[in-house]
Length: 151
Image (cartoon, rainbow, N blue to C red; front, side, top):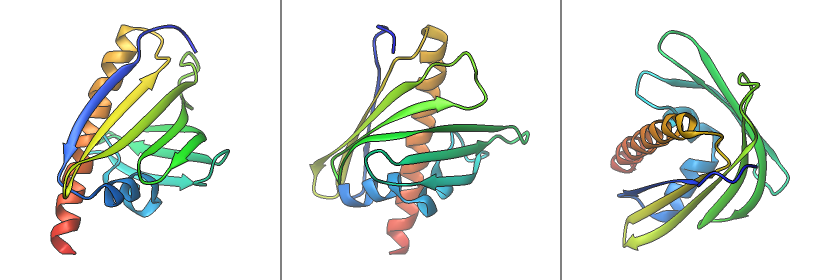
């Protein structure tokens, strides 16, 4: 990985830490929220949730374009932290990077997610990933709000 500064995004979500972690690590949940906007779908979410296990996620844009990312889990400390590599399959120029997602209880029923994405190659990539992660966190918030109401 390169020496560029890491991207960090934060979001507080009204849901218990265990539920937020589960939504981040269960394929059936990821298929319902992972994407930049509500127009994106997730037709593929494969996870082998263990250190050394692999994952693969496909996000489909409204125009039908698929964007697939894959990687390997490096650390799993449920429900507080998960670290994994990140590699876009369709982007040959894009290097392997690392994502760390930390889940901290801020108050009963509220979880702060601190997401750090290391190794992004340039400012354009940082801006694109900031936009993408902020969108994903918004979609996660919507999903958890709806699922908690149903529970």
